[in-house]
Image (cartoon, rainbow, N blue to C red; front, side):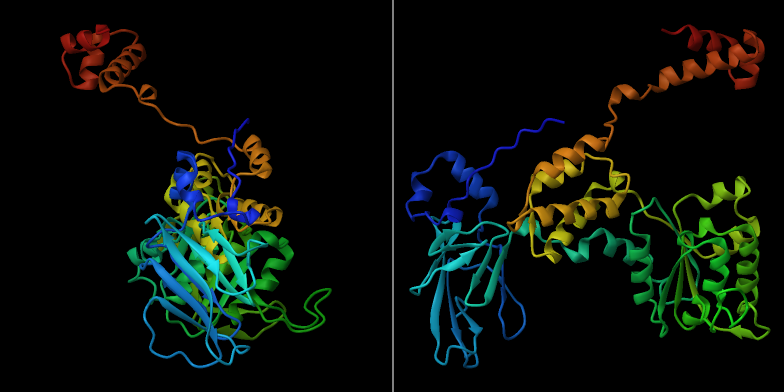
Length: 444
């Protein structure tokens, strides 16, 4: 896949930006800064050595930042205080100003430069994703479109939709392709369940059939070769909490019987033990394939299927069917890594199928960060290689859909063919008149 990417050399990275550059450069520079520059309404994050992280919404045209070991006093909203133990009296160190009502620039008010994305400068226009380090204090910038609205996010909306179920002990089945985040939602459900016990995750597909029973029910010393001590099973560890059985579609038929017996009796015995144990456990099951189809194929017992699906069944859609969620994942990942991801790159990602879903997307972004020395995730050679190996989402056009008229014609012709061209029987079968059969079948 050949992709042409236009790179604009960032002036501030060379430490050469002058105040007049915003007025003297081409219209392309204006468009570039309109898209990438920090503007009114964007966010600034202050991370001092002492004290916690502070978020500032840039709603004023001028800010002064100063360090002091003294406690913050009542100050104007454009004066930003950062606690710094090395300064006994307040010292103005940085000034952030809005140039030409468009973009913010930052300049040093001291004799020393600040470090911008690894380069020392005294003065610079600030872009989305820039990271400033000055005397141990870190300052970063995020644009309005580079932050996730947690309340309106896919996961939050999804969880709120079923919030009345979470405090109950009702079992839950989560289906979805590999990597869609079934484990993520299972943890979120447990956190909102108000259960006092632990969240225990057991991935059945990662264990050999002989080990699944011991991991699930536990075992006693000497119960089999290698059992050199008593082992607590996942069921016992999850008492009072939630047991998340991942890849339940990998459970063998004989173990399905034992699991069903536990679900009915709420009691179990460790391998090699005669002692019964009981406990209140909330189950969340996850499957990468349709459990109903597994029942049809004889790979899952129907009685177990009806037992575990008697509660709430959820389906997590793949990323290719939910581009808004892909964008949220990208923004959340970049925010957690103190990075910014280019919006055009996200739009490109939304056109790909991502067969590995979130797991594949995050692994790709991790590699990009390792190869990137800056704080902005943009198109690079890794994307070029990746695009060649992943199929784009097939765009469905209107031409791919048949009209209702054509569908009726095709169906009538199919019935006619079944009755060997007998229009009378065809009309009777379809509940229409013979003239209607002739009209529909002969209509071009």
